[in-house]
Image (tube, rainbow, N blue to C red; front, side, top):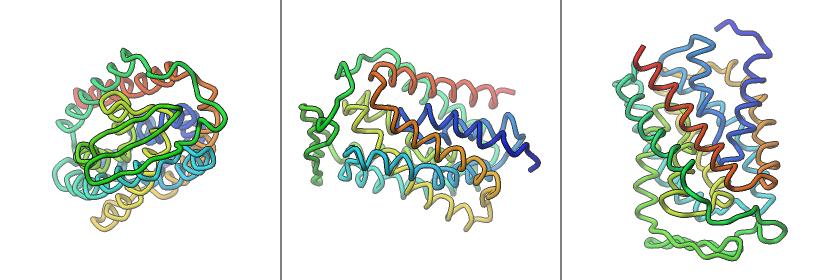
Length: 277
């Protein structure tokens, strides 16, 4: 599609810088960007957003790894649920939801609920941790329970619940091309009760893996991405996400929750508006 060359990288940088601080890839707003500003439509929009995730997320994931916040047991648990869900979501998007109006309304209502809850909920920690406190000093998962120690606190949650939700999120993420991080992050923070600073890295890593699987499956179903557009957006996104991941530790938790909540509500309004036109 014809497009001004500087527009996709600039939009992707700004969006990714903000969203990555809340554990989200920029794809959550780049799908509406493609539809509203570039006039794109159909399953290719979702596939292009997923390819953007593949290009843009490694920088932020690497930054979280360096800071000791890439909690692998949680990341692997999320990935194990989202990958099969993504395959189903891609199939549904191509065969049943190429128009996707009803699905957009359903997803918009879910994102609206989670966004409002994030804006209203109070964070458990009052300030960003520093120094060695950034490191999740222990984290392990069994078939029953995930246990995480972070910033002097111990967190426990049921692995089955996370796996089931991750599968459902994978369906939504595969169909819309958002990779699932935009839904997983608020779920893990508001419902499971995990700290946002520990959640951001694992959700982005899961987003990267599931996005790669989703892109491959879209191609298999002859609904592949716009590779040139994905590369342009990815060029800005990889810088924006790395900078956002690095800057996150200097932002209070409450502000990060407001950013995440505002992003989800903005996406919800965008999807509802598109569905009701």
